[in-house]
Image (cartoon, rainbow over all chains, first blue to last red; front, side, top):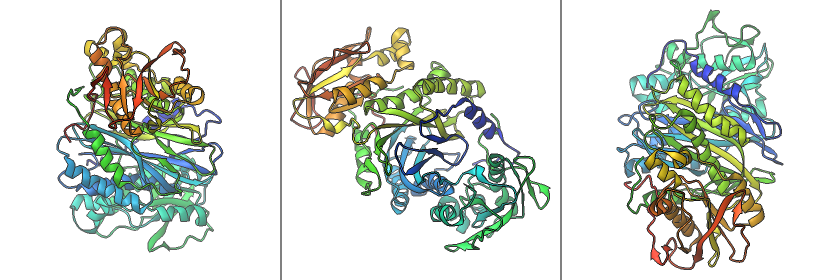
Length: 310
Length: 310
């Protein structure tokens, strides 16, 4: 689970290169393509828009056989996708799973994996509708989650305006801290992330957030991405930090799966939602798109980027 | 690319085990879950049903770096998914791609891969709406294709009735023959399969086929699956064979991506569709579900099964 510490926007660059080559035909139902937490598709005649997200979980990249129990891997695989649905204010509808199994992953492991995944799927009413199975050298899976929002109401990354307030939910850095220590509440947070589905719906329908995304790759990189999508810069203070985590982990550590969102400055955002703190950390500004300053000092997007060397 | 030659229904058994654990909540829009070419989902208010399929393509399992060019891998990744949409009589709407890249796969390979994939996506008006990127030891991808059919009209595997005629499109065994020889038209067929999308729509809207699926794992295994789904057995003759292929390859070789379908005995199925032969190969019968006889002799389901050892 290497977490690079250098500025790394090569994944963004590759995604941008691909995005430019894809045309979205008019009238095809494709509302939003590559570049947000989810794609948006509008079925013919439907009163709802559908959200789609895919997430891979790969042995020795995202989890280790020795340290991550099978039910936790299954849980996390789905939780990552559900978190993307939460980020757009969606309600999960179903999921699909492609699973490639290494020779070491016998039926006990497979059963445990599905047990963990289906426990979360059952709780969130997200039936597993299909998928694919294969063998490979390393165990890996790819989860697709479909969610829905009332037509035209998905929260996107590109809706923030200058002067609007920036918020995050929860306490940051817990997952990175847990990964480093392998113990305690922080470790539990690393292996058992909680997708913020109820909060996402609340932000969409009650707060009327203007932009949102989930914190999967670290605040510094994810806020940079939100700023890029909205064509703005941001000024922030330090976020609320998970007990035992460092400021570094809270700023750059990935996999917290909290929500980052913006709202008009005079919107009254409650200080917490169902016990989860909602903390104002800063303000969106006109300026170089993507630039983020922490207490007036430029903050480099040091979060996790798979494609730094590509 | 190992192709096991023993009877192998362990993949079916594993899928069945998972399927039993998944409840499809009523009113959730989930029409059909695990066990067909595609899952079926009905969005709220929509006049169409959506079809979803996922397919993995893994280095050294489904392709080899040395023998399969990057654009061919990209093409095939999407073609496999489109073939599942064709099998249900669907029109493709969009796709999602998760791609994990091995260290050897540099930007030239990645560009070639996307070139091949996007060429087919453009031709079939299936825009790439999103996906995920990661690094891994072996290159692999998982493609999701969404298609649509008018509400309630998807062709499924479970619709065949006793006495109905069984058909296949095209000539079988070409892909297996190409994989064995690495040359000629058969090799081209192996690396560049053609999803039978127009045929699938024709079977749904004109022929009113009662059941259909695509031939991805070999006729013997795939017909066995169709029979199981419909609760019937089948009697067949030898199918039409691709030039240079053996009967063995035509019966058990995978990746032909032709369509297997059934229709009432008195339906007049044309002998060809847009130059592609449609051959009647047999009849659905009452009897032990899943049993297939070739010229009166039991035909074992010897096609490709990833999970024979699980």
